[in-house]
Length: 225
Image (cartoon, rainbow, N blue to C red; front, side):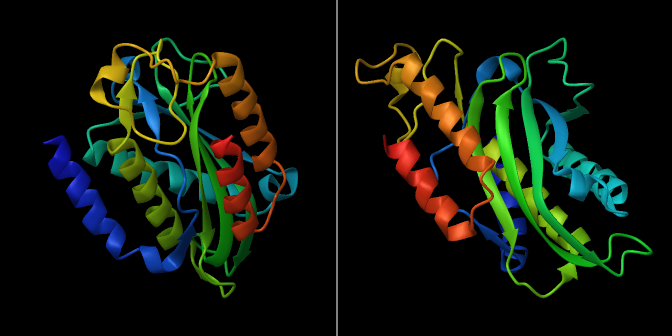
């Protein structure tokens, strides 16, 4: 059933890819097994974006789009309340809207362009599990509801294809490990201190607001170290 859901999501993405650019060649996503299919959602943005007239409508519509995609893939989506980790383990989706331009937003979401970084984190420890960046494919305004639907599909597809690991295992930055690596950490695994330093550099990268191509290059450089 899980494989079927992944195939359905992949087919759905085929019709949306033309509207978005997605950073490619990024490291595979891993999530913790004890989170099961529980997700929490939080939106972050620059104050200038939060203060825009369409921000509340955008986040409301986006939350609903993600909920529909999550339920279709057998995920449970909740909202993070006040930055609290929640009672149960979950994968926290932090949707950081780096740029938002809206036109004709008097009714609905209207047309526009955006750039988004999605951080997949462990809700209880705050550990960064992976990140993805999405950006409008054209500078010309396009329907924002279609763009957030496409990004929502991408997010759930990433989660559906993610490797589940135990919390005692180090996250693998470059390659999916052999099945035995899920039980016992490989001697070649990076020390936890190095992984924590890598997490910090990734967080700093996400704050630098780089052009799309430069962001990809810097991400690959950090993950290769």
